[in-house]
Image (cartoon, rainbow, N blue to C red; front, side, top):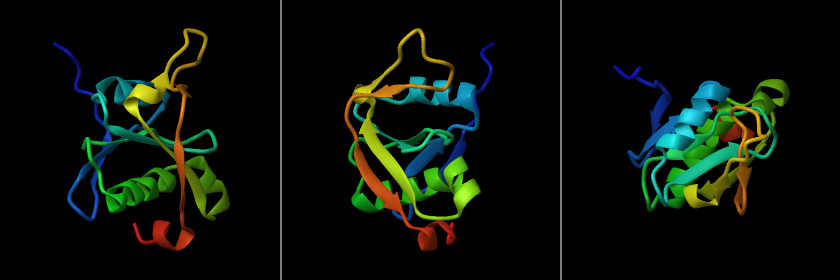
Length: 123
């Protein structure tokens, strides 16, 4: 029997389901389960969960809400309590080299959004 993988789960203000990893190994599983054309997020700095928006066409509000969720569980937020830069990318832009450590991925292209401190404090 395959063990159930548990992620942090949350819903955006528009009701879209969002999943986030809890550890490096859990982030690996999160990337594996992400479907083609879904949106992924990670902080610009190391030390955050990967976040997967479970929609092929998320709204701007969904993306920003997911960015806040990503920021809230990041080391950047924990250590600095300031705005956090978040990278946004699609599943097809993620790659894994054999030499990369667990929980680490390369991203070919991404967009960036800043999760504002005032908004992170609200979630």
